[in-house]
Length: 436
View 1 (cartoon, rainbow, N blue to C red):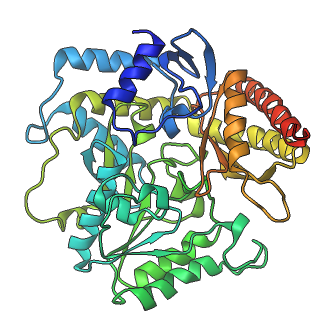
View 2 (view 1 turned 180 degrees about the vertical axis):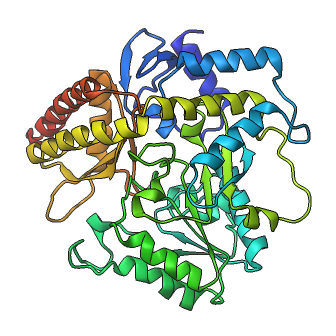
């Protein structure tokens, strides 16, 4: 098909709620490692990775070769028939997961993984209520939308009951008007206040992303999760760490994002980066908690042999090539370059994130912090013209999100930053230009 035919059929046959980036949608054609090309043959340096999904590079031959071999051997069996692929993946996860987490349930997406985690917490504790965080995103099902606290993603009403939301640790826009060095981590203490005032006092779980993804890579202060985990335990709940975007070395030096805060959760959910593009979801927990899920359950496609061998190979590559360490080293180099861009362009109000998960919040004025949503869209268009793919997020649509493959190097960072620099220069010049 031509680009025009693809776009016309997309408009005609796909739900209109499936939105696309850019004033003229980018029609993808092929990709390899850190580069993606459109149907017109233009090549882009991909610094968004399919929304924090491409961990080890597009069409990485080590992963695709495993997929091709498994398709010819056994493509599908379902969970009622054990096979080598699923148990090998589960065993690998047990060896790298923190604490006593050693049993897995596989599904097809982060949405399903979070659904399973909530069901598990409710059956294990005998309680029903879940505490989630404002600005969080948990998926697209009815329950996941109920957990989500981000209005544009909660339009399928009515929402679920039994979910309450605590203030999130949004230091750049502190709800208490404090600064990180003087706040006393009041946002963490708000979790207890929410439990005491909006629940029965006995909760099933607290669910949080270590770094909020769709929320704009909001990164909590170092003591936040230690305080919260103690509160959650006191009120009988499980701690569910949503690692859909932060898992598998993305934050640097650790397998899972929550480990950066020196906290061991009761349940881990994940998806995205563990499959490098194949559809997979994970809910992992301790044997004791897993055993509390009574009755029968299956997942027709969860732990599919093809997705399992792909995910196992992704994890092996990350481990063998020391990509978590690379994320830390290259991420620090990248962060310094982004901070330098902040010094150069007043449009950048905040730089945040961890490892190879970095964001810039754009504002019209640093004193008022007025969100620069339109400028964010314009910057993305300019970056595209420069041959750089980036994402966006944040409740107000003014945060640039970036999550390149974990095996990029400093030369890739230099290329991306140079393209960003030119894009920011154009946007800033347009902001200063007098109206005609």
